[in-house]
Image (tube, rainbow, N blue to C red; front, side):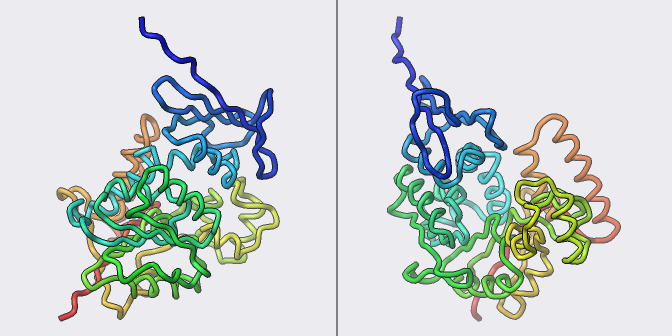
Length: 351
């Protein structure tokens, strides 16, 4: 009979950004499983979205993410990289709907607003012959992203740089790029930043290159599900929306004294295709239509394909009904209204 080594466990106590190792109970337990994976468990007294996740991450990387993200979102941050129904699904449907994997070989890609590096690691796996630069405004995020790249051994073709401010790109990131990706980023830009950041990253795109913007909530969808989780707040004037969010939202993102600027930074106002087109107007931007085996033809299809990857059972049925309603609205109005945007632009080739 084969003998197994008894799994080892690490127990952590998280307090005020510090990790201690007590002898008794704590907030997070990391158990080494027999399959070589680690089971991360967050104790019930911590308010978290996902409280358990099995990961291939090293203990050092898990600890580093814990220090930066805290216990409540530890498992969620890890799964964004490892669960194919999250970042990978968004990237697959919002990029490979327009291009083949082979189109990325030998190219340069800018992951603008790379955060903690989860989406960048997915991009590096999907396009292993692509050189990727991730830029981010928060130094702690860049630290986690670099640790992820070290863990996967991709630092020879993936690197991260810290932006000096919200309207600039870091110095020394090289020349122009073939592709630029904004994944779950656009909604966090303040209105004035959108007017400056999009032209900035567009200026670093080569002729014939492509810009992808996705995982951004739709500004006019009836339910604002990203920040406040409130219905119809998207249609209220800013001052009324601010008051309503502070008084009625139960979302972790909304504190009773939160300012309107901070709510905008959290992503309350989403975006629209028309807004993005207007910012890029006159800059040689061609808005592309999605096409994947003839089945993915608009924003609604892109959203629903991701839903198929991530939902199951009753949730999938509910979302299918929602998709049919949205298709009906499009048939009547001609407008493709979906919970999330997924748009792609090509830069005109010089004549």
